[in-house]
Amino acid sequence: MYITNFQHFLDEQGNIPVTMPKEARELANFFALLVDDASLEDYDAAPTIRCIEKNCEGLIIPIMVFDTDEIHWSCTRCEAKGIITGWQGTKWDNR
Image 1 (tube, rainbow, N blue to C red):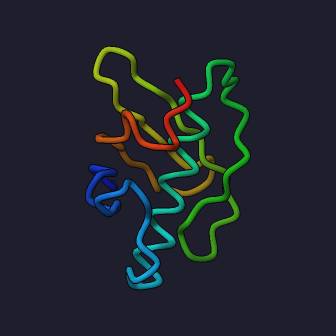
Image 2: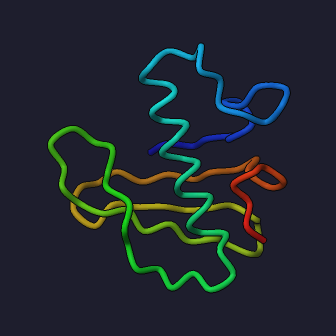
């Protein structure tokens, strides 16, 4: 399970640094996609984001939990799942 504070992936300007190692940057971009998707006002939970696990062809379902302001996500095929915090106020926050 991935438990992520999204702020840890961002620089002082709120961007994903290009100087970050490739794997970390890819993970940060994956989390950014999930935040962007789950924070849409008309989000309908139709999965469109591919799983990040190697050899998995599943899709990710991100869900915003309003009580905690967390984004919970899980793969439709494998056991990959996680929680994203610290996304509020980022450029991917669509609220």
